[in-house]
Amino acid sequence: RHLLRQCQSHKMKMKKNLIATVVILISICSNASAFAPGNALGVHQSTLSTNGAPTTSFRKNNGAYPSEIHPAAIKRQRKSITSVQTKMGSQALVYGAAVATTFGMQTIGFIAAYLLKTETFYDIFGGVNYLLLALLSAILGATGDGALQWIDDPRKILTTVLFGVSRGWLLLFLSWRAHERKGDSRFDEVLGKGGGTPQPLNFLVYWMAQAFWVMLVSMPMLFVNSSNVIKPGFSGFDIALAVLFFVGVFTEIVADIQKAVWVKRGRLGDFCKAGVWKYSRHPNYFGEIFQWWCLFAFSYSSSQNPLGGYADPLWWAGIVSPLFTMQILLNMQPTGISNAEGKSLKRYYDKCPERYAKYRDNTSILIPFIGYGFIPPFLKRTIFFDFERYEYKPQSGESADNVAKKDENSPSTP
Image 1 (cartoon, rainbow, N blue to C red):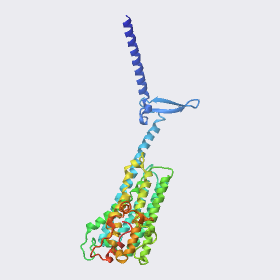
Image 2: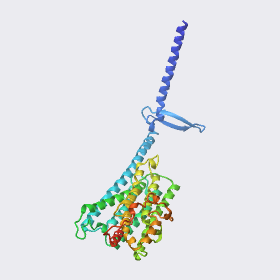
Image 3: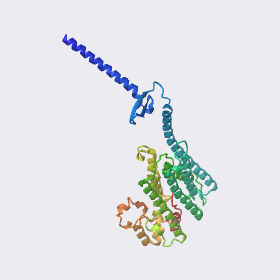
Image 4: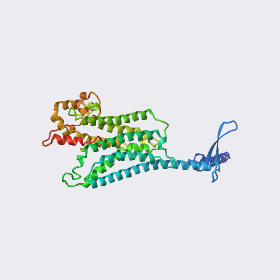
């Protein structure tokens, strides 16, 4: 009997525990709507008690939202979805329009130039293309409901203005140079000048290369102008990079002007040591490369990724701007340092070998600074970009006049 009573008591406890568990589960299910995303099952409300203390209540919707809550909940969900669509949509619109505009414009330029058998406006098309992308991205980046307007974002304003100054100077300088030179010997062969056979496909390659140059260099600017990130002001990081970007632009402009004046005055001293050229053999190329590294870093703050720019693939894509510029100016033979150094140094070594050798040994090839002569050779050959391939190696049959002509046709920028 005692054992029977114990078994019955144990069964009663189990029933009570089971009932309590069921009650708890029902309670949780009834109020789970308080934690559902977007209040899909119920509504969580915070109210104030009669004494002003905050209290929390949970309501079950029984298949329907309370009439006073339903519109607000739906509006918040729609606004969130629209915000994501706007951010992604404005970026796709800006980049898509930039690609179509750039390659369309360069294709039109190629057709017109080939029919007219001229290369006069090749560089001009490049400069105008840059300015057109800045204008289009400023307009299209503010398109759509909820998009961040260009005028309301100081980063967009500063980026567009500095980019416009940089590329505006490029357009002016290249237009002046095209007028002064009355042609560019780089295109003589592909246009069939001098009795040769025209090479339309090779001429098209020049124009498509310019299209890639414009598009890739503009990536950080497009990234900033297509962003919908709202930030109250500039951080110290932003300010420093904006100042450095301006320094790069200013260095390039000053170097171009100083070199042009030196040429106009008759190339006094055989090689240019005017102004900043005293501290760098190619300060204009330094300014061009440096400004795009600064703009790429500056664009970091415009990332729409919640984790930051380091987790944003589109921000990382902008690194092609400085890298592509370095590739063109440091490694591609038709232009940049590869065209200005090497065999193009013949006329200096023919006219003033000792003076030029001393200038070369004590003057940085790219970064302007004092004391380059004290830098160890292995550092010059690596981090200072003074590579062995830039050294002059005498070749038979190369006249100083032909070398000088090639150097004159080497553009300040690609």
